[in-house]
Image (cartoon, rainbow, N blue to C red; front, side, top):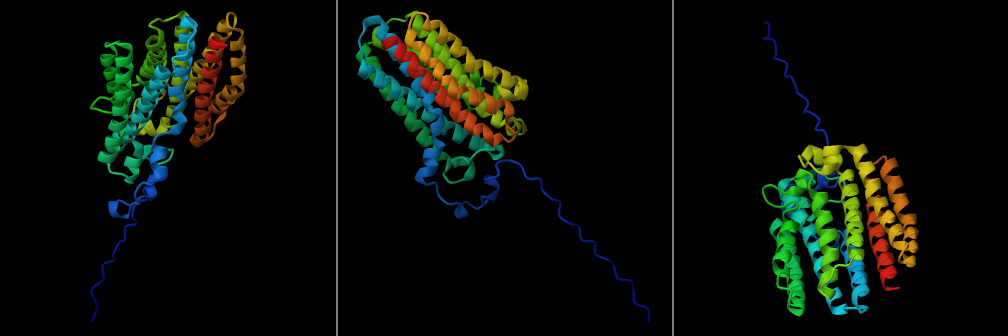
Length: 326
């Protein structure tokens, strides 16, 4: 008796999924119960300490420029300005962690996994921490306002906090539209430096303007190298940073210009304040950062360039401030 032919079962091999996104995120379980909770080290890492020098630089330069006016150190006001700047910087870092995490943008990051994206912390908790630092900045700013009786600082401070949040927050974050560098130049350069000088002496000498431009350019350089590291991932995630818009080569050129132009300003200042010549020593840090940006092979190498660019900023600010008070 002839048996009926057996139907051959065709086993389809599962398609191999291409790995993409944050390599550290790929190993995180989808089940929140299996994800370890964020440690103190994770929270400190999310504050992105490498970016904090950008908040210190304008305070140094602004305070030095203020001393040119009356020859005094206004330590209380200077420290309050520093508290505002640092709190805003940390707040915007946590706000970015929250906003990029809930959007899924950080799924494509090359660097360390963030709190929200890794699910080590609840998005709401990260947002609350960001708002807490914004509140600290607001309280310190209010103290400056009361002490100086410059009540128009209140709307200026509110604008700074709103700008910090909507860098990556909201429905249409300007950081996703290639405007990040412009806002960083304005707020971490002009507003922070000139504001520091004004609250102390209610005057804006031209030295403060030169220093503000330099501080803004260096802050933009740090943002550029950060975005250059994530250019492929941001492009895939739909984050249209300036780096994504102009491409790798143009970003390298612009980064180099942003790093070197402040030293041209320092040379000009050195004609009147000889100590400013010492600012050229900071090139020992700045030039390696430029070299890495032009020769890197793996995006992770740019983490070193980012750290060097941040160090360049605060060292530059120190020497410029010294030249004003020396």
